[in-house]
Image 1 (cartoon, rainbow, N blue to C red):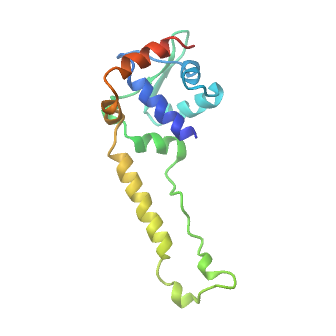
Image 2 (image 1 turned 120 degrees about the horizontal axis):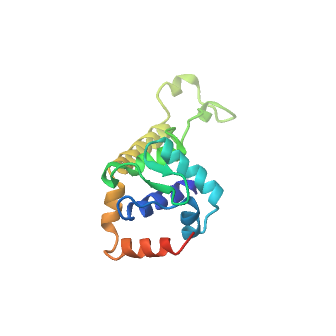
Image 3 (image 1 turned 135 degrees about the horizontal axis):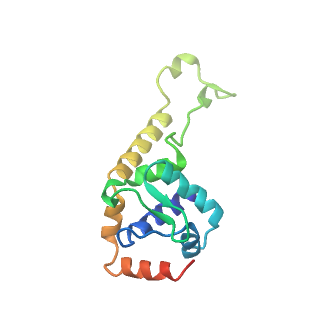
Length: 153
């Protein structure tokens, strides 16, 4: 859930005019999200060097570097960490169906397949930048986003 939020918010921030920012409250209202929790997630992107934050009445969040230098993998890992989602606990060696240790010298084929899938997923996200996402939007999207975002907060 929070990964979806930060991916969308980062893409939204990338559509702002250079130097412009949006507050967490604006982004929360724009997407109908809980502002305190969204703020926590956006701060993770700041710590990762993907967003910059300013305080004060005109403060908010903006990209810390060009959208072409921010990958989707960087955003995901800033929020979710880098641990693979699948962890093999060798259940093939447990219970009534336990295999003998000699049949478990090789890594479990399911662990191999899940590892391959995770690496393919990481490779795909590492090869996609926020700028790539913005480039797929209709030409009218950035101005519409800026207008609607300015109507919030």
